[in-house]
Amino acid sequence: MAIMNIKNFSFTYAKAEAPSLKNITLPIKQNKITALIGPSGCGKSTLLRSMNRIHDLYPGNKYDGKIELLDLETKKVNNILKIKKENEFIKLRQQVGMIFQKPTPFPMSIFDNVAYGLRIQGIKNKTELSDKVEEALKGSALWKEVKDRLNGSAMGLSGGQQQRLCIARAVAVKPEVLLFDEPTSALDPISTAAIEELIVELKKDVSIAIVTHNMQQASRISDYTAFMYLGDLVEYDKTENIFLNPKEKQTEDYITGRFG
Amino acid sequence: MRLLINKLVLGLSVVSALIGLAFLGWILVTLFVKGLGSFHFGLFVNDLIDGGLRNLIVGQIILALLASIIGIPLGMIAGIYIREYGNGRYAQLIRDLSDIMMSAPSIVIGAFVFAVIVKPTGGTSGFAGAIALAIMMIPIVINTTDSMLSLVPKELREAGIALGASKYKVIIDIVIKAAKVGIMTGVLLAFARIVGETAPLLFTSETSNYFSLDLTQSFPSLTVSIYDLANEPEKSSRDLAWAASFILTVIVLVINLTGRFITRNKNHK
Image (cartoon, rainbow over all chains, first blue to last red; front, side, top):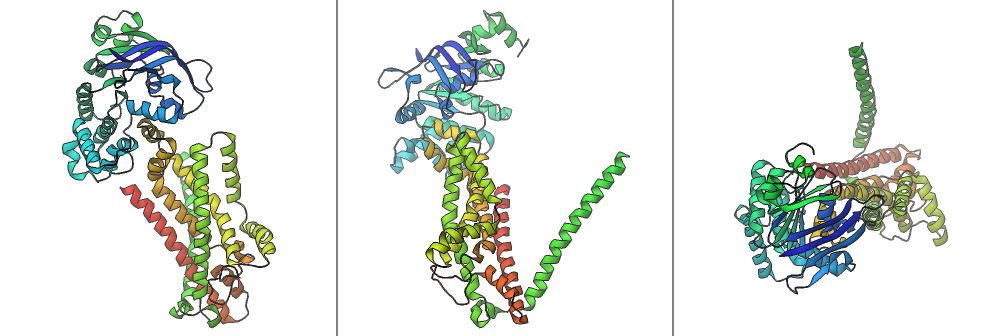
């Protein structure tokens, strides 16, 4: 079942003449990992950043088509491109979390970092907060390393730990979908392996879309893969089909390293 | 040949650096010798009328603090506005204006405040002096806030938005916290800059020989009194001016060094 359905979606950046994404149709399946791959400038990050409307920080962009999100509580389907009100945006971003390329710990304690989204949800009760923070940190395989220094600054953690903290922070608000924008490209191989393991672990609870430059990573962790090129979706299929039997010539050329 | 030019340029830069440093050293040495010669702790106990500097030091600091109370919030809010909310021409206009204000001659600011405040209110006052100093301070604080906020990576803002925070909450909770040390240092340096100003005070607050906390009257100012004392014929007055200059330099130096110390500590973390 698809939790998100992107239908005939086009996107044009403010002041740009040509669209950066052209007529994309793509499902994000529930409790699966969907990888978006393609050479630089193909629009994969642009697509990912449309899925929680983070583009709207910078005004003037143009959206066309639909991006439908299934609300698991009410079972209703909403077109997120229709969102205009502040409180609907807040809800969208709590349903669709995001992890960035560079770790983005906030300049506050480890506890407050994880509690940040929870406090926005309006949770004030201290025991409830600390229970949820603990749960999120355990879910992100960070609890053992930080449980004795929850009040220490998040800036003191290593890069890999900071990235897991950001994942904990996103997981804490119980999103339906998590978007990962090249989450390991700033990390060393050991931290990368830890994050990959964590992402696979997380799909029990959330649906995941991940942009990656690393094709091995896509083939290791994803269930579905979408190959994009110059703003078009070239091919979307199960990951094994994309990597073993691609239907399109362009896909084959890219995954075999002939261009990109 | 290239080596020769290299050596020549290196030599020239060393010589110019030395000349600059020599003048700086000369100033400091003169200040120390002349200032320390007439320095005694009685200066901190007596007011100017009794040959001391107490009222002047207190007055100068009160003026600078009052200017900060007016100037820092205004400058910070304006800086936050042009960096976080202002998009396009309007913000750029404010930024340019603020840059021009920063290089406005301080005597002009003093004359301006004289015209719009001192004249209508019928006389010099501590308030007028503090306002003149605040006008000097605002563009410096705007500039610091603006440039410190620009150093906060945009990913940090996006991460806050991506957790559902609204824009103003991201700015207050995250962006300002991330830029806090830089802004604090800048504000401290702005304070150091205005605490030693004379021209904006010359015909706004003037100075006073007596201890005073009444900001509606002429207000004791260390810098203006240095100017007055240095123009007096008696040697005792000029000695007092040297001592006052020495104390002022030490105050400014200490604030500056504190600012630098904070920055360095932050970079070490």
